[in-house]
Image (cartoon, rainbow, N blue to C red; front, side, top):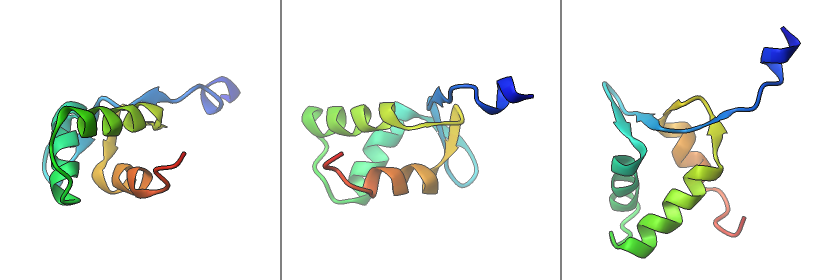
Length: 75
């Protein structure tokens, strides 16, 4: 039991929206549009790198991931 309790979390590969899941790459554009950021390679790379730091379930819900992304772009 302790082995699973302290097991390292996995990187996110899908994001759950209301009724379906999308791959992380597709979510990046959704996130940028929702925040009125321009969709360009630099912004995509920046968001993708930050998502790579998020550890949780392989399929995470949108609210949790957006809260993580919105929190402190300086970190």
